[in-house]
Figure 1: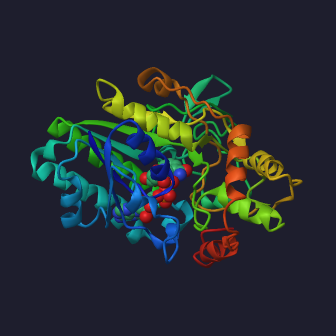
Figure 2 (figure 1 turned 60 degrees about the horizontal axis):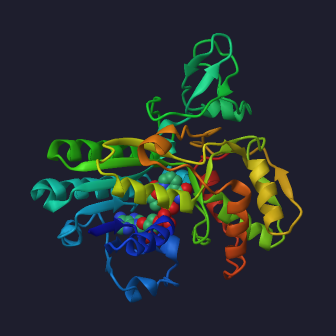
Length: 377
Ligand SMILES: NC(=O)c1ccc[n+]([C@@H]2O[C@H](COP(=O)([O-])OP(=O)(O)OC[C@H]3O[C@@H](n4cnc5c(N)ncnc54)[C@H](O)[C@@H]3O)[C@@H](O)[C@H]2O)c1
């Protein structure tokens, strides 16, 4: 079939598109080639014009006319196009809403205006950020609770761990399930939740199959090394290569579920191929929380360097504390069990980074913007 991949020139798209082509599909990419991700003069993108079976359209999903052309004749859509910086979203609110929400609204509009255009299935790359803090157990009675975002006052007081909103007691992290409460704590997360609602409602009403994949922290070969607004492992890798100290926010025990891009791509490919569409939400993660301090040390070792970390006690408003996905639905509905463990994935990532030009260390620039806006303490 012919598949449109919006944002297909980005990190995840650049792995997904070859996989779809290998499976015998024709692929069309619609991508702006955003300078923040690809640089002012996009590099390394010859494959977009040279790969047989691949058609590339440069343009935005928020531009109706371009989008109409891009959707014409396709049977499936994988909607990856988004702005992705959590911190940046907190002060570039209008841009994030335009690209992520309006862009998705245009996609829904194009589908609705022409009775689906023959599109049978739409997949959305959503984000675990829609859960906010996600799920915990309350030790006193083993109740499952989903605490609200940590307040600015709590962060200022260095109270890093979320507490039970009812009893105030300390909580125990458990893997977050798809039916747990959504509670976005950043503008980025709010736009991803809105994308989900727009697509779910449009597809439901038009009888188009859909799947919403909530991705955890995706990493791997090909991720942007130029974008200082997202991608903790990219940012750390540049610092490691430059022999610089790795600044670790909060107390370093904040955690993320790091999932290798090959597992994410497998999930998308499987969600396109199931006989019946999922018509629901699936977490895509490795299913394990790793602290930022541990991942910094493991990544350093993957580069053959001794960990050079410094816990700074700084924090960013909008950041969550912990994250681990329940991947039961990934296994049962899509038949995928995550394959690449963190050590293997980090070795592959470090080996690839070593083949790339050494970028500027731009973390301080991104950080200064947050500090200036009062979004970092
Ligand atoms: N990488 C992660 O850790 C992660 C985690 C959760 C969710 N996601 C989601 O996965 C998707 C892809 O992420 P990625 O890591 O590949 O990001 P990326 O930034 O590498 O790629 C995004 C691509 O979208 C393009 N783009 C941006 N705005 C566009 C627009 N309006 N129209 C067309 N193209 C546009 C960019 O030029 C870029 O090529 C995003 O929707 C993101 O929210 C990613």
